[in-house]
Length: 177
Ligand SMILES: [Zn+2]
Image (cartoon, rainbow, N blue to C red; front, side):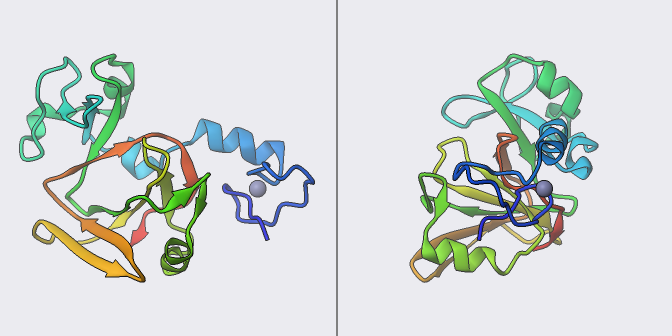
């Protein structure tokens, strides 16, 4: 059963590519691609094609120096690098699932893992084959790695930026991770 990536209701359209239950949901999703708690935070950076974090003026940004971060408005207005990134910390956290999407569909291990996070905001990574589960968590040191059914899982909660594409796998909220 396919579900609308904005409201979660089942999709009855015959089009197998349909990702929304209605044009209303599609419009809302395009207007609000990123959770408001994130767009309201001054934790935005640009990123290079090789995923180096950059300031809005194109110099190196640091995950430990908030002076190198910007507002969402300033970051989206900047043309430095190739895209956006968001600095974790202060309660913002992310789980990174690499190489788990095939033609936009999560593999079995990833699908089972995602079931632990109903309602969470999930983005497709710039490469198109990974997922980022966004949410909240207290700050814990470094990166926490684990394997679940062969799925490579990395959790981050501080001193790290994560790319943001605005390309949601599932629109949702920032919930405890
Ligand atoms: Zn919908």
